[in-house]
Length: 482
Image (cartoon, rainbow, N blue to C red; front, side, top):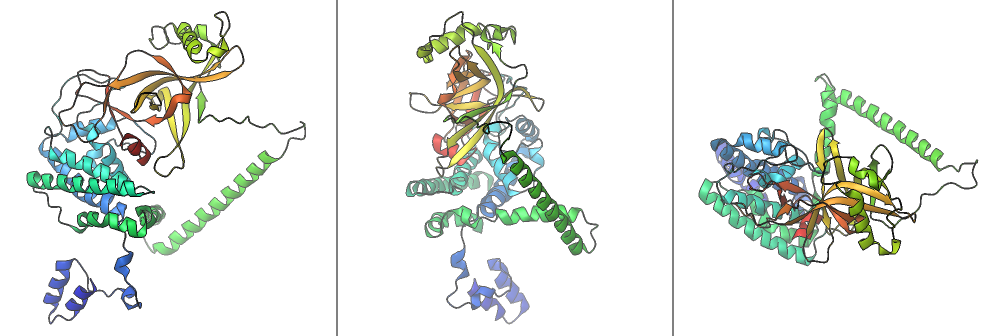
């Protein structure tokens, strides 16, 4: 780069100078780090996932190509409807008008990349799926779909915060597959991938080995400051904005300090012992990796009255007999007699703690089990630990805390398990997993719940209870699945 700039500055004419700079995509500016002895600013460069991937290859190249092709196929409307009905998930942005997104922040582009291929033959209507065969949004086995899937796998892997040698080797395989898929897209759509951000993919493994994982050089914190500055700018009159923005920042800082002081005072009051009792009550400690939240109004009910909660519902039909049979098989030491009362309390959410396979630190999922969550039905799915190898899934329709006659409390989920599906889509991408939701309801001890799982309903299947397993929601999920 330095040699190009020096050559341009020595040019005889301005036209020749501009030609030299334009051919290399540079400006005639001397970098201040060139004057540092033994300095090499280019050796400090490391792959940036925000500008190279989210706002680069995907946001500025592949995604515009997708929108243009959908417009030619007159399928932008169906994609918008599909994305609007896509199941919600924590830390995953929901899009009601995705085809209008041409310019947005990097995280939004990344969220679109995560869920896009699951919306090609998918539509959601309430909680059930209409079992018909619409035309695919893209032709069957289209190379662009395989390219997007390859980009998904590359992006989730390159952004991991821990990269042992095994993951680096897997990343190299993903890079080869991604470049091969890009070549197929070029052959069909004449899309050129000859640009720097695409070329830098070949050096990312070398960068990680030499300088560490990509999160250490992320530009996302700086981009976050730009959003704060934009919000402050929008509160000005647009004239002489610097003093106004400084004043707004001072007010926000003062409010934040006041809030911190109030919170610290409240925390101190809660920590003070109660003089009216001998000792401060202490919450009982538990080793459970889950906690229930949002209890259903009405308190605990006798198990024999549970079938009257939703008359005619298969979930609660013959509830007491099924519950006692499950308890007798799972907890035989309790010896629950038929005449003994079992009190059941229902909850609408569960917090599942687990150890992330990405960096081996603690993480948490929030599982919703609510017939009306923000005006929509919401029953999340779970990864279940079973003796058989592979991943096993279940959808939770009720979260129950059962108080047994002995006083022991047992946490259960009323679920429908998923089984391997015989149906296959016309475009079967790498890592595509399809499951059918069983009709029968069964009890599941919360001890066997690993974490949450995102299951995306399939629109084109003859059977309405067919789902894709979305393995790309985060790095831990991707590692568990692959």
